[in-house]
Image (cartoon, rainbow, N blue to C red):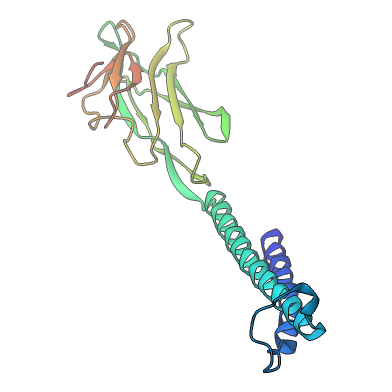
Length: 229
């Protein structure tokens, strides 16, 4: 795995710095008693004193290198954790479309045995899923909830759209369009839809969704407690 091999490489690099530092530390010793800790001139520096200075210099450089190496390794580990968090793709259940039931009318009269089509789109399925339903003898219809198991990372915004239209109508056949940005049931609707009637003779209206100031429903349908934009 790339993350693990990267950590091993960084560990070996840091360990490499330890070897010369350890050897220098083992060989460093203080000068003999005649040395008072100062040098009056460069030509008075003995080989022993020069060796001592040389060893202490590389000891300080080695410790500094190890410090920087450890800091870089820590930063790399944090970067790996951030990547793991952003790429986390645990599958969860998302409601693509909440259930919808009502009566289909034209000029107040039931449209019996009429074919309805519902097209659903969501992350990873932009082409959409087409579903077919039908009204009964009284024009009533029931569109069930549709769920999908999705794996979306932390930075991906969930978006689902639902469009319902009458298959027998050539033009202006849409009766419902909605979008939702959260996976919960009925999250696209401000209040539960009660008493839904969809009359093809009515004009389309725009409706606010739940917990949103942005309209996300366009429909010919009407229901109790609906909130027009």
